[in-house]
Length: 101
Image (cartoon, rainbow, N blue to C red; front, side):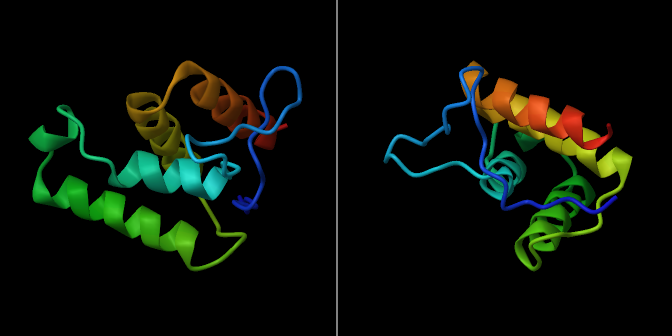
């Protein structure tokens, strides 16, 4: 499916979610940070798994509307959940979930 990764995340009050510097968080930013942030869990990944993360980050950063498989979308959900606060996770997951509807 094609996904517009420039969409801005909004919380449960329909307010734009911002990072600690006050910058709007887009789906692209959430995906990229989730994919490229090193966590205790990701330190145990193989080189192949790390390369897959890099490949996905490249995919979403080279076009505004990349073609993403349902399996890749599930990976994005997982990685976002590993690195972000509940407000960002909730906003991103709600947006991701709405894409299939």
